[in-house]
Image (tube, rainbow, N blue to C red; front, side, top):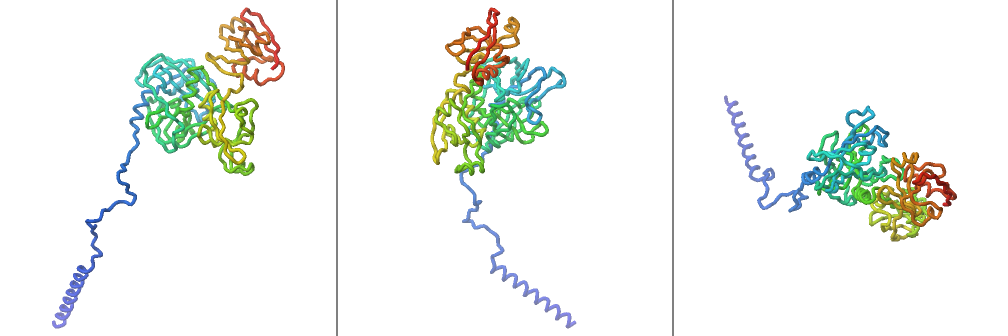
Length: 475
Protein backbone atom coordinates (compact mmCIF):
# COMPACT_ATOMS: atom_id res chain seq x y z
CA UNK A 1 0.00 0.00 0.00
CA UNK A 2 2.80 2.43 0.94
CA UNK A 3 4.45 1.63 -2.41
CA UNK A 4 1.31 2.40 -4.40
CA UNK A 5 0.74 5.66 -2.55
CA UNK A 6 4.33 6.67 -3.28
CA UNK A 7 3.95 6.00 -7.00
CA UNK A 8 0.72 7.99 -7.09
CA UNK A 9 2.35 11.01 -5.43
CA UNK A 10 5.30 10.91 -7.83
CA UNK A 11 2.95 10.80 -10.83
CA UNK A 12 0.86 13.64 -9.46
CA UNK A 13 3.92 15.76 -8.85
CA UNK A 14 5.16 15.10 -12.41
CA UNK A 15 1.85 16.23 -13.88
CA UNK A 16 1.85 19.43 -11.82
CA UNK A 17 5.38 20.22 -12.95
CA UNK A 18 4.55 19.56 -16.64
CA UNK A 19 1.41 21.72 -16.47
CA UNK A 20 3.29 24.56 -14.86
CA UNK A 21 6.05 24.44 -17.47
CA UNK A 22 3.47 24.55 -20.30
CA UNK A 23 1.72 27.56 -18.78
CA UNK A 24 5.04 29.30 -18.30
CA UNK A 25 6.07 28.76 -21.94
CA UNK A 26 2.64 29.84 -23.19
CA UNK A 27 2.93 33.21 -21.50
CA UNK A 28 6.52 34.01 -22.43
CA UNK A 29 6.89 32.74 -26.09
CA UNK A 30 4.59 34.56 -28.64
CA UNK A 31 6.30 32.97 -31.67
CA UNK A 32 3.43 30.60 -32.37
CA UNK A 33 0.69 33.24 -32.39
CA UNK A 34 -0.17 34.09 -36.08
CA UNK A 35 -1.95 37.42 -36.34
CA UNK A 36 -1.50 40.27 -38.83
CA UNK A 37 -0.80 43.66 -37.36
CA UNK A 38 -3.83 45.92 -37.76
CA UNK A 39 -1.47 48.70 -38.88
CA UNK A 40 0.00 46.58 -41.76
CA UNK A 41 -1.66 46.42 -45.23
CA UNK A 42 -0.79 43.20 -47.09
CA UNK A 43 -0.68 43.22 -50.92
CA UNK A 44 1.14 41.35 -53.72
CA UNK A 45 4.55 42.67 -54.68
CA UNK A 46 3.47 43.28 -58.30
CA UNK A 47 0.33 45.16 -57.34
CA UNK A 48 -0.29 48.28 -59.48
CA UNK A 49 -3.07 50.52 -58.14
CA UNK A 50 -5.75 51.60 -60.62
CA UNK A 51 -5.02 49.01 -63.35
CA UNK A 52 -8.12 46.85 -63.84
CA UNK A 53 -7.92 43.68 -65.95
CA UNK A 54 -9.68 44.20 -69.29
CA UNK A 55 -10.76 41.17 -71.25
CA UNK A 56 -10.74 41.52 -75.08
CA UNK A 57 -14.08 42.62 -76.54
CA UNK A 58 -14.94 40.23 -79.36
CA UNK A 59 -18.63 41.10 -79.44
CA UNK A 60 -18.25 44.55 -81.01
CA UNK A 61 -15.98 43.30 -83.78
CA UNK A 62 -18.26 40.32 -84.47
CA UNK A 63 -21.38 42.49 -84.58
CA UNK A 64 -19.69 44.81 -87.08
CA UNK A 65 -18.23 42.17 -89.36
CA UNK A 66 -20.82 39.38 -89.55
CA UNK A 67 -23.44 41.38 -91.55
CA UNK A 68 -20.77 42.34 -94.13
CA UNK A 69 -19.53 38.78 -94.82
CA UNK A 70 -21.41 36.84 -97.50
CA UNK A 71 -21.71 33.24 -98.64
CA UNK A 72 -20.61 32.54 -102.23
CA UNK A 73 -21.65 29.52 -104.30
CA UNK A 74 -20.15 28.95 -107.74
CA UNK A 75 -20.94 26.51 -110.52
CA UNK A 76 -18.40 25.57 -113.18
CA UNK A 77 -16.84 22.81 -115.23
CA UNK A 78 -14.19 20.85 -113.35
CA UNK A 79 -10.70 22.08 -114.24
CA UNK A 80 -7.30 21.63 -112.65
CA UNK A 81 -6.71 24.05 -109.79
CA UNK A 82 -3.35 25.41 -108.65
CA UNK A 83 -4.38 24.79 -105.06
CA UNK A 84 -3.70 21.28 -103.83
CA UNK A 85 -5.37 19.58 -100.88
CA UNK A 86 -2.62 20.68 -98.52
CA UNK A 87 -3.56 24.34 -98.59
CA UNK A 88 -6.94 24.35 -100.34
CA UNK A 89 -9.67 26.39 -98.69
CA UNK A 90 -12.16 25.51 -101.42
CA UNK A 91 -15.15 23.75 -99.90
CA UNK A 92 -16.43 21.52 -102.70
CA UNK A 93 -20.06 20.56 -102.37
CA UNK A 94 -21.96 17.49 -103.55
CA UNK A 95 -21.26 16.23 -107.02
CA UNK A 96 -17.50 16.70 -106.96
CA UNK A 97 -17.12 13.53 -108.95
CA UNK A 98 -19.21 14.93 -111.82
CA UNK A 99 -18.05 17.26 -114.56
CA UNK A 100 -20.44 19.97 -113.35
CA UNK A 101 -19.44 20.89 -109.80
CA UNK A 102 -20.24 23.46 -107.15
CA UNK A 103 -17.90 25.23 -104.77
CA UNK A 104 -18.55 27.24 -101.66
CA UNK A 105 -16.62 30.17 -100.28
CA UNK A 106 -16.95 33.54 -98.57
CA UNK A 107 -16.72 37.19 -99.51
CA UNK A 108 -16.57 40.61 -97.85
CA UNK A 109 -18.72 43.60 -98.80
CA UNK A 110 -16.33 46.55 -99.07
CA UNK A 111 -18.73 49.07 -100.63
CA UNK A 112 -22.46 49.69 -100.00
CA UNK A 113 -23.07 49.65 -103.77
CA UNK A 114 -22.66 45.87 -103.89
CA UNK A 115 -18.92 45.38 -104.41
CA UNK A 116 -17.59 42.23 -102.75
CA UNK A 117 -13.96 41.10 -102.47
CA UNK A 118 -13.09 37.41 -102.34
CA UNK A 119 -10.33 35.04 -103.43
CA UNK A 120 -9.65 34.44 -107.10
CA UNK A 121 -9.73 30.69 -106.52
CA UNK A 122 -13.30 30.97 -105.20
CA UNK A 123 -14.69 32.36 -108.48
CA UNK A 124 -12.04 31.20 -110.96
CA UNK A 125 -13.62 29.70 -114.12
CA UNK A 126 -17.12 30.06 -112.63
CA UNK A 127 -20.05 29.91 -115.02
CA UNK A 128 -22.46 31.10 -112.35
CA UNK A 129 -21.89 32.98 -109.07
CA UNK A 130 -24.57 33.18 -106.37
CA UNK A 131 -24.20 35.42 -103.32
CA UNK A 132 -26.26 34.96 -100.14
CA UNK A 133 -26.20 37.83 -97.66
CA UNK A 134 -26.23 37.36 -93.91
CA UNK A 135 -29.96 38.25 -93.90
CA UNK A 136 -30.57 35.39 -96.42
CA UNK A 137 -31.20 37.59 -99.48
CA UNK A 138 -29.83 35.91 -102.63
CA UNK A 139 -28.27 37.60 -105.69
CA UNK A 140 -26.47 36.72 -108.90
CA UNK A 141 -22.98 38.22 -109.12
CA UNK A 142 -20.65 39.24 -111.93
CA UNK A 143 -16.84 39.45 -111.89
CA UNK A 144 -15.41 42.98 -112.03
CA UNK A 145 -11.78 41.86 -111.89
CA UNK A 146 -9.73 38.82 -110.90
CA UNK A 147 -6.02 38.18 -110.52
CA UNK A 148 -4.29 34.86 -109.88
CA UNK A 149 -1.02 36.51 -108.85
CA UNK A 150 -2.59 38.02 -105.73
CA UNK A 151 -5.43 35.46 -105.45
CA UNK A 152 -7.95 38.28 -105.24
CA UNK A 153 -11.18 38.93 -107.11
CA UNK A 154 -13.83 41.64 -107.04
CA UNK A 155 -17.44 40.72 -107.78
CA UNK A 156 -20.62 42.82 -107.79
CA UNK A 157 -24.28 42.31 -107.04
CA UNK A 158 -27.11 44.62 -108.06
CA UNK A 159 -28.01 46.10 -104.67
CA UNK A 160 -27.37 49.29 -102.73
CA UNK A 161 -27.23 50.37 -99.11
CA UNK A 162 -25.46 47.22 -97.96
CA UNK A 163 -23.51 46.85 -94.70
CA UNK A 164 -19.78 46.92 -95.40
CA UNK A 165 -16.41 46.73 -93.68
CA UNK A 166 -13.88 49.55 -93.62
CA UNK A 167 -10.21 48.87 -94.20
CA UNK A 168 -7.77 48.77 -91.33
CA UNK A 169 -4.04 49.31 -91.78
CA UNK A 170 -2.53 45.83 -92.01
CA UNK A 171 0.94 47.32 -91.50
CA UNK A 172 -0.14 48.24 -87.97
CA UNK A 173 -1.15 44.67 -87.08
CA UNK A 174 1.08 43.44 -84.25
CA UNK A 175 2.32 39.97 -83.41
CA UNK A 176 0.13 38.69 -80.57
CA UNK A 177 -2.78 41.00 -81.41
CA UNK A 178 -6.27 39.49 -81.15
CA UNK A 179 -8.11 38.99 -84.45
CA UNK A 180 -11.36 37.39 -85.63
CA UNK A 181 -11.87 35.21 -88.72
CA UNK A 182 -15.38 35.50 -90.17
CA UNK A 183 -16.69 33.23 -92.90
CA UNK A 184 -18.67 30.16 -93.87
CA UNK A 185 -16.63 27.02 -93.07
CA UNK A 186 -18.15 23.71 -94.11
CA UNK A 187 -21.16 25.66 -95.43
CA UNK A 188 -21.93 26.89 -91.89
CA UNK A 189 -22.91 30.51 -92.43
CA UNK A 190 -21.75 33.45 -90.32
CA UNK A 191 -19.12 31.67 -88.26
CA UNK A 192 -16.72 33.68 -86.08
CA UNK A 193 -13.47 32.34 -84.61
CA UNK A 194 -10.81 34.13 -82.58
CA UNK A 195 -7.03 33.94 -82.46
CA UNK A 196 -3.92 36.08 -82.52
CA UNK A 197 -1.58 37.32 -85.23
CA UNK A 198 1.13 34.65 -85.22
CA UNK A 199 3.45 36.12 -87.86
CA UNK A 200 3.55 38.61 -90.73
CA UNK A 201 4.96 38.69 -94.27
CA UNK A 202 4.77 34.90 -94.67
CA UNK A 203 5.76 33.51 -98.08
CA UNK A 204 4.32 29.97 -98.23
CA UNK A 205 4.79 29.46 -101.99
CA UNK A 206 1.17 28.52 -102.55
CA UNK A 207 0.48 30.56 -105.69
CA UNK A 208 3.46 29.14 -107.51
CA UNK A 209 3.53 31.39 -110.58
CA UNK A 210 6.33 33.86 -111.21
CA UNK A 211 5.35 37.35 -110.15
CA UNK A 212 2.82 36.16 -107.60
CA UNK A 213 2.39 38.22 -104.44
CA UNK A 214 2.78 36.33 -101.17
CA UNK A 215 3.10 38.23 -97.92
CA UNK A 216 0.45 36.64 -95.73
CA UNK A 217 -0.65 37.46 -92.20
CA UNK A 218 -0.42 34.19 -90.26
CA UNK A 219 -2.95 33.60 -87.46
CA UNK A 220 -4.11 30.78 -85.24
CA UNK A 221 -7.79 31.67 -85.65
CA UNK A 222 -9.63 28.53 -86.79
CA UNK A 223 -10.09 28.66 -90.58
CA UNK A 224 -11.49 25.75 -92.60
CA UNK A 225 -12.72 24.89 -96.11
CA UNK A 226 -15.34 27.49 -97.01
CA UNK A 227 -13.56 30.35 -95.22
CA UNK A 228 -11.80 31.36 -98.45
CA UNK A 229 -12.50 35.01 -99.18
CA UNK A 230 -13.79 35.71 -95.67
CA UNK A 231 -12.73 38.52 -93.36
CA UNK A 232 -9.89 38.80 -90.90
CA UNK A 233 -10.75 41.73 -88.62
CA UNK A 234 -9.16 43.43 -85.64
CA UNK A 235 -11.04 44.15 -82.42
CA UNK A 236 -12.21 47.48 -83.89
CA UNK A 237 -14.08 45.53 -86.56
CA UNK A 238 -11.76 46.77 -89.31
CA UNK A 239 -10.77 44.56 -92.22
CA UNK A 240 -7.05 43.74 -91.99
CA UNK A 241 -6.98 40.67 -94.25
CA UNK A 242 -8.80 38.28 -96.57
CA UNK A 243 -8.51 34.66 -95.43
CA UNK A 244 -6.96 32.61 -98.20
CA UNK A 245 -5.18 29.44 -97.05
CA UNK A 246 -4.44 26.95 -94.29
CA UNK A 247 -1.45 24.74 -93.62
CA UNK A 248 -2.73 21.25 -92.99
CA UNK A 249 -1.96 17.63 -93.69
CA UNK A 250 -5.65 16.74 -93.48
CA UNK A 251 -7.30 19.60 -95.39
CA UNK A 252 -8.81 20.96 -92.18
CA UNK A 253 -7.54 23.48 -89.64
CA UNK A 254 -4.64 22.32 -87.46
CA UNK A 255 -3.42 25.65 -86.12
CA UNK A 256 -2.11 27.72 -89.04
CA UNK A 257 -4.09 29.99 -91.34
CA UNK A 258 -3.05 32.76 -93.72
CA UNK A 259 -4.69 35.99 -94.88
CA UNK A 260 -3.86 38.50 -97.61
CA UNK A 261 -3.05 41.88 -95.94
CA UNK A 262 -5.73 44.55 -96.31
CA UNK A 263 -3.27 47.13 -97.67
CA UNK A 264 -2.71 44.90 -100.69
CA UNK A 265 -6.45 44.15 -100.93
CA UNK A 266 -7.30 47.85 -100.93
CA UNK A 267 -4.88 48.64 -103.76
CA UNK A 268 -6.00 45.68 -105.89
CA UNK A 269 -9.69 46.45 -105.41
CA UNK A 270 -9.09 50.08 -106.37
CA UNK A 271 -7.36 48.91 -109.57
CA UNK A 272 -10.23 46.55 -110.38
CA UNK A 273 -12.77 49.35 -109.98
CA UNK A 274 -10.83 51.81 -112.12
CA UNK A 275 -9.18 49.58 -114.74
CA UNK A 276 -10.63 46.08 -114.46
CA UNK A 277 -7.13 44.72 -113.77
CA UNK A 278 -4.10 45.29 -111.58
CA UNK A 279 -1.67 48.10 -112.29
CA UNK A 280 1.65 46.53 -111.29
CA UNK A 281 4.58 48.68 -110.27
CA UNK A 282 8.19 47.51 -110.61
CA UNK A 283 11.43 48.53 -108.93
CA UNK A 284 13.58 47.30 -111.77
CA UNK A 285 16.04 45.25 -109.71
CA UNK A 286 17.01 41.65 -109.04
CA UNK A 287 17.69 41.00 -105.39
CA UNK A 288 18.24 38.43 -102.66
CA UNK A 289 17.76 38.20 -98.91
CA UNK A 290 20.75 38.68 -96.61
CA UNK A 291 21.72 35.82 -94.30
CA UNK A 292 24.63 35.51 -91.90
CA UNK A 293 27.06 33.87 -94.33
CA UNK A 294 26.22 36.28 -97.16
CA UNK A 295 26.76 39.24 -94.82
CA UNK A 296 30.21 37.91 -93.85
CA UNK A 297 31.21 37.19 -97.47
CA UNK A 298 30.23 40.70 -98.59
CA UNK A 299 31.48 42.65 -95.55
CA UNK A 300 27.99 43.78 -94.55
CA UNK A 301 27.56 45.07 -91.00
CA UNK A 302 24.42 43.01 -90.28
CA UNK A 303 21.92 40.54 -91.74
CA UNK A 304 19.32 43.26 -92.18
CA UNK A 305 17.95 44.35 -95.54
CA UNK A 306 17.62 43.07 -99.11
CA UNK A 307 20.72 43.01 -101.32
CA UNK A 308 20.55 44.47 -104.85
CA UNK A 309 22.19 41.94 -107.20
CA UNK A 310 21.38 43.70 -110.46
CA UNK A 311 19.83 46.99 -111.60
CA UNK A 312 17.71 46.70 -114.75
CA UNK A 313 18.65 49.21 -117.43
CA UNK A 314 15.99 51.87 -117.90
CA UNK A 315 14.05 50.77 -114.83
CA UNK A 316 12.82 52.79 -111.89
CA UNK A 317 15.77 51.86 -109.67
CA UNK A 318 18.39 52.92 -112.21
CA UNK A 319 16.66 56.25 -112.77
CA UNK A 320 16.64 56.85 -109.01
CA UNK A 321 20.35 56.08 -108.67
CA UNK A 322 20.11 52.66 -107.01
CA UNK A 323 23.36 50.70 -107.52
CA UNK A 324 24.35 47.08 -107.62
CA UNK A 325 25.57 46.16 -104.13
CA UNK A 326 23.17 48.49 -102.32
CA UNK A 327 21.25 46.98 -99.42
CA UNK A 328 17.65 48.16 -99.11
CA UNK A 329 16.95 48.59 -95.40
CA UNK A 330 13.62 50.45 -95.42
CA UNK A 331 10.80 51.32 -97.79
CA UNK A 332 8.22 53.94 -96.86
CA UNK A 333 9.64 53.89 -93.33
CA UNK A 334 9.02 50.15 -92.95
CA UNK A 335 11.92 47.73 -92.33
CA UNK A 336 12.61 45.37 -95.24
CA UNK A 337 14.36 42.14 -94.31
CA UNK A 338 12.78 39.64 -96.69
CA UNK A 339 11.48 39.20 -100.21
CA UNK A 340 7.90 39.00 -98.98
CA UNK A 341 8.17 42.28 -97.03
CA UNK A 342 9.54 44.07 -100.11
CA UNK A 343 6.83 42.61 -102.35
CA UNK A 344 4.09 43.59 -99.89
CA UNK A 345 5.14 47.23 -99.87
CA UNK A 346 5.59 47.46 -103.64
CA UNK A 347 2.19 45.91 -104.28
CA UNK A 348 0.49 48.54 -102.16
CA UNK A 349 1.44 51.10 -104.83
CA UNK A 350 0.77 51.80 -108.51
CA UNK A 351 3.07 52.76 -111.37
CA UNK A 352 3.79 56.46 -111.03
CA UNK A 353 3.71 56.42 -107.23
CA UNK A 354 6.77 57.77 -105.43
CA UNK A 355 8.26 55.69 -102.62
CA UNK A 356 11.10 56.50 -100.24
CA UNK A 357 13.93 54.04 -99.65
CA UNK A 358 16.81 53.87 -97.18
CA UNK A 359 19.79 51.91 -98.50
CA UNK A 360 23.16 50.93 -97.04
CA UNK A 361 25.98 51.98 -99.37
CA UNK A 362 29.73 52.34 -98.78
CA UNK A 363 29.45 52.19 -95.01
CA UNK A 364 26.60 54.66 -94.58
CA UNK A 365 22.84 54.96 -95.00
CA UNK A 366 21.47 56.88 -97.99
CA UNK A 367 17.88 58.07 -98.55
CA UNK A 368 16.53 57.63 -102.09
CA UNK A 369 13.23 58.76 -103.66
CA UNK A 370 12.00 56.46 -106.43
CA UNK A 371 9.07 56.56 -108.88
CA UNK A 372 7.64 53.14 -109.71
CA UNK A 373 7.27 52.21 -113.38
CA UNK A 374 5.49 49.51 -115.30
CA UNK A 375 7.42 46.42 -116.29
CA UNK A 376 8.22 48.17 -119.55
CA UNK A 377 8.42 51.95 -119.85
CA UNK A 378 6.08 52.13 -122.84
CA UNK A 379 3.53 49.71 -121.37
CA UNK A 380 0.44 50.78 -119.44
CA UNK A 381 -3.00 49.28 -118.87
CA UNK A 382 -6.38 50.90 -119.35
CA UNK A 383 -10.01 49.96 -118.76
CA UNK A 384 -12.02 47.20 -120.45
CA UNK A 385 -9.14 44.72 -120.77
CA UNK A 386 -7.17 47.07 -123.02
CA UNK A 387 -3.40 47.24 -123.22
CA UNK A 388 -1.19 49.98 -124.70
CA UNK A 389 2.05 49.06 -126.43
CA UNK A 390 4.16 51.29 -128.71
CA UNK A 391 1.34 53.86 -128.94
CA UNK A 392 -1.30 51.31 -129.97
CA UNK A 393 -4.30 50.46 -127.74
CA UNK A 394 -5.25 46.79 -128.10
CA UNK A 395 -8.45 45.04 -127.04
CA UNK A 396 -9.16 41.30 -126.98
CA UNK A 397 -11.53 40.38 -129.82
CA UNK A 398 -15.03 39.08 -129.16
CA UNK A 399 -16.47 35.66 -130.00
CA UNK A 400 -18.38 37.39 -132.80
CA UNK A 401 -15.09 38.62 -134.32
CA UNK A 402 -13.68 35.10 -134.17
CA UNK A 403 -16.65 33.68 -136.09
CA UNK A 404 -16.77 36.56 -138.55
CA UNK A 405 -13.12 36.35 -139.58
CA UNK A 406 -12.61 32.61 -139.05
CA UNK A 407 -9.79 33.07 -136.53
CA UNK A 408 -9.11 31.43 -133.19
CA UNK A 409 -8.02 34.50 -131.27
CA UNK A 410 -6.42 37.92 -131.55
CA UNK A 411 -6.16 41.55 -130.44
CA UNK A 412 -7.72 44.51 -132.25
CA UNK A 413 -6.07 47.93 -132.42
CA UNK A 414 -8.87 50.23 -131.23
CA UNK A 415 -6.73 53.39 -131.08
CA UNK A 416 -3.41 54.26 -132.68
CA UNK A 417 -1.10 57.13 -131.71
CA UNK A 418 2.27 58.02 -133.18
CA UNK A 419 4.73 55.25 -132.58
CA UNK A 420 6.43 52.18 -133.96
CA UNK A 421 3.29 50.41 -135.20
CA UNK A 422 1.75 53.44 -136.90
CA UNK A 423 5.07 54.26 -138.57
CA UNK A 424 5.11 50.71 -139.96
CA UNK A 425 1.87 51.34 -141.87
CA UNK A 426 -0.56 49.54 -139.57
CA UNK A 427 -3.99 51.21 -139.29
CA UNK A 428 -6.72 51.26 -136.64
CA UNK A 429 -9.06 48.25 -136.70
CA UNK A 430 -6.27 45.81 -137.56
CA UNK A 431 -6.51 42.53 -135.64
CA UNK A 432 -3.17 40.92 -134.78
CA UNK A 433 -3.50 37.15 -135.00
CA UNK A 434 0.13 36.08 -134.65
CA UNK A 435 3.62 37.50 -134.17
CA UNK A 436 6.53 35.56 -135.67
CA UNK A 437 4.08 32.72 -136.41
CA UNK A 438 3.15 32.48 -132.71
CA UNK A 439 -0.57 32.96 -131.90
CA UNK A 440 -1.49 35.68 -129.40
CA UNK A 441 -4.18 34.52 -126.97
CA UNK A 442 -3.57 36.79 -123.98
CA UNK A 443 -2.20 40.19 -123.03
CA UNK A 444 0.85 38.35 -121.71
CA UNK A 445 1.47 36.82 -125.19
CA UNK A 446 1.12 40.25 -126.77
CA UNK A 447 3.34 41.98 -124.22
CA UNK A 448 6.12 39.38 -124.39
CA UNK A 449 6.09 39.38 -128.19
CA UNK A 450 6.69 43.14 -128.31
CA UNK A 451 8.98 43.58 -125.30
CA UNK A 452 11.15 40.45 -125.23
CA UNK A 453 12.10 40.28 -128.91
CA UNK A 454 14.89 42.17 -130.63
CA UNK A 455 15.37 42.78 -134.35
CA UNK A 456 12.78 42.18 -137.05
CA UNK A 457 9.43 40.52 -136.34
CA UNK A 458 6.57 39.47 -138.61
CA UNK A 459 3.05 40.54 -137.65
CA UNK A 460 0.09 38.76 -139.24
CA UNK A 461 -3.53 39.85 -138.97
CA UNK A 462 -6.78 40.87 -140.60
CA UNK A 463 -8.66 44.14 -141.17
CA UNK A 464 -12.41 44.63 -140.54
CA UNK A 465 -13.13 44.24 -144.29
CA UNK A 466 -11.63 40.75 -144.18
CA UNK A 467 -8.35 41.65 -145.90
CA UNK A 468 -5.39 39.79 -144.43
CA UNK A 469 -2.15 41.71 -144.06
CA UNK A 470 1.47 41.14 -143.02
CA UNK A 471 3.89 43.67 -141.58
CA UNK A 472 7.59 43.40 -140.86
CA UNK A 473 8.80 45.76 -138.13
CA UNK A 474 12.05 46.24 -136.32
CA UNK A 475 12.16 46.23 -132.50
